[in-house]
Amino acid sequence: MNEATVEIGKRKDDAATASANAGTRTKQAKRARVPLYPSKLPLVGHLFRAWKDPIGLFREALAAQPGAVRVDFGPFSYVMIGSHDSIKHVLLDNAKAYVKSRNYDGLKIVFGQGLLTSEGEFWKRQRRLVQPSFHRQKLAKLTTSMAEVTRRTLDRWKVEGTPTTVHDTMMRLTFAIVGMALFSTDVEGEASAIGNALTIGLTWTNDYAEAVVRIPRWVPTKKNREFAAALRTLDELVFRIIRARRAEKEPGDDLLGMLMAATDESGEERMNDRQIRDEALTMVVAGHETTASLLAFAFYLLAENPEWQDQLVEEAESALAGKDPGFEDIPKLVKTRAVIEETLRLFPPAWAFERQATEEDTIAEGTITKGAIIGVCTYLLHRDPTYFPNPEVFDPTRFYPGAGERHKFAYLPFGGGPRTCIGNTFALTEAILALSMMIREVRAELVPGKKLELDPRVTLRPAGDVPVRLLPRPARVEAEGHAPRSAPTSIADRAAVRGGGLTRRSP
Ligand code: HEM
Image (cartoon, rainbow, N blue to C red; front, side):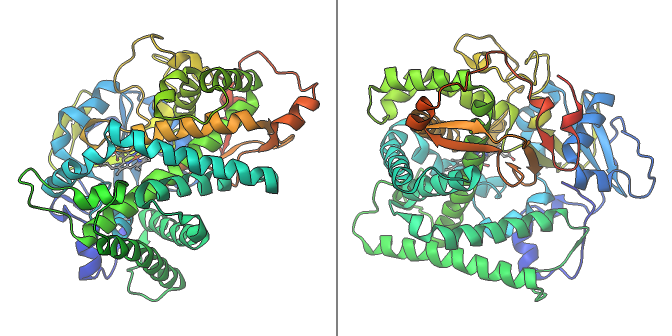
């Protein structure tokens, strides 16, 4: 999250990958002229607090200056925007004046020129090429494999027992789903090697984003060597799959086949293997951890609110009549969707995202100087009582059809403007489908004496795991006496952000 970074000995290859817009990046932008949240520590400013408890810091800063607030980290600064109109201005109305911030540089090294990290005309062209792969009729096909993968997971639980780790299990499930959707290949066999490589890659990119001193990749530190090996593992797998597919006559109708067949308007230009690798890897990473955390948080909230579990089981039983869901069933799962959307409100996996100004810009709260970093914290935005009364209360009815209008930039789990998540419908379909299948077979219960702790890094995930155990449903039926509670409960009383913050705030 911090911008106070000095890059030492940066080599050409890193520099090229790291910044598609190097010309727009200044090491130390002139401070944006928006109200400052002062620090008692004149030299370092809020730097240490931002490492320890970024959500707590942004909460306090925005409480002091609600529209937009400047937070200084040493000589650098960061503008956190809270006003819905100013967020719309930055993400949509004047999006051309902003690029992804330099905190994405580490991700660029992993994803190259994939959609998440590319910019400008290249990004625009790629987005046009990739977008059709996510159209409704394509998703309808992918839904079948989502259900098959989930069914296999549930069958395994019947033999091996329900899993003891919820978040890890959801990671394996969503990894298998995105692997199948992309490659029509059962990547579960490769899951642990890939999972390890991804964990090393993402930890490295996170450290790179947060480092005060960035150690270049070519310095053979232990971390750098592990990172290089992890990248090799990922490349080997993806290029192997691409080569195998090229050897086949038909590209296939999975996402990889669609990426290979995609052409520009002239019908002549296609992506080369490197571009396909960048897009495929982007989707594996952007698409699986986020959805896994979403499902893990949903189980946590359902464990807290057992009456909602009962409602979801009822809904799944009446809408699906004992079969596994297909694409046509998703609209019938209204309550399941509402639970997923409310989970995304309270625990948005993309809890904050950033932009960097390429030119001076004016928002209602002041002047954004060229090079300034802008942050939008969805975790806090989704708790604004203007649009979400009693914001700490889990209340999926907020998302029932016709439940009321809100500002289009008040709820942004998938971002906003032209850089909105390309996989949003994929993710919602997957989460609704998987939850409706799992909740019929398992019951989520809180682990007594344990609290949820949050770990807000590149994405928001539970620190360790959610304090939930999954029990097979028949066993739960026999063990009556776990009477469901009916009063809605407040998240703030129970959840804790690692290092402070949330527990101390009442609804
Ligand atoms: C719950 C699940 C997900 C969440 C919360 C999520 C969230 C987001 C957010 C907030 C952004 C915008 C970031 C920004 O503006 O800086 C984004 C972009 C993106 N997401 Fe997702 N995402 C999810 C699932 C997926 C899936 C399943 C895929 C693909 C299979 C995917 C692929 C992408 C890509 C490629 C981008 C970059 C789009 C662009 O800039 O053109 N995401 N996601």
